[in-house]
Amino acid sequence: MGSRDAATDTGKAYPRVELIPWDPTDEQQFQRLYDQRVACTWDYGLVAEWKGKMLRGQKVLYWVVLAGDAPRRDELLGDHVKRFPKERESLVDTATSIGQAERTPSKAPFLPIGHIAIEAFPERNVQFSLPATTYWALQSSGLGRSAMAQFERIAAAPPFNSTFIALDTFPKAFQLREDCVAAFCDARGVPRSPEIRTTQEWYQSQGYHVVGCNEHMYDWVNPKTGESITAPCVFMAKSLV
Image 1 (cartoon, one colour):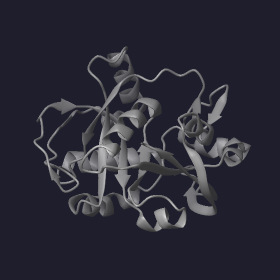
Image 2 (image 1 turned 135 degrees about the vertical axis):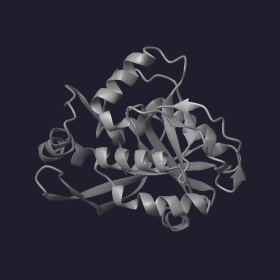
Image 3 (image 1 turned 180 degrees about the horizontal axis):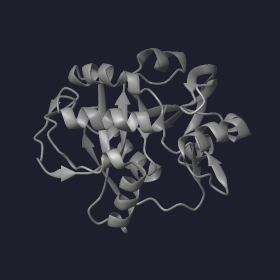
């Protein structure tokens, strides 16, 4: 869980993106991931744990980067930096592995606008009767369609060779509640969209279907009020073959 934008507005255009592996041994990249998790108000306390998983090949995180030929690229990057001033400095591609596979980094500079992760959860696969080759996604980016399309291609290829991709997100009814809109938009300074398409609806439009739910999945703390909200989730999956 943890998209920066709690809902996706209809009719939004998504520029082409590239995915660059996170290097957890690089201090700047470690700090940038922490800053992005703080900005989305989810799981920032788990970044050190994710570093260990990344180094053991159990979890792979990728930076979401606007492609060099993306329309309005400079304008979009400017808007991103204005919204997240801690992220104005470029990083350098230094990751030497993807899971257990070796990789030669490009050493090129880049400015990430989000991140996405892939991780195996065998117990969830058994719980929801999904193939053992199912991998689970975590996303934090406002460019969902482009990032997910690229992510699905990566998941289906070596070293993952995934046949299904799965994820969890908020149920539609929960996300449309006024207290939830206030908490996930107003409290974080995210403008309310005039027409909200929930993340569950958006993922369904991309071919994902519901495989299960949990009414008490997360406890989210409003960063402004300190109020805790118990959040449910739906688990969704999509075949890649």
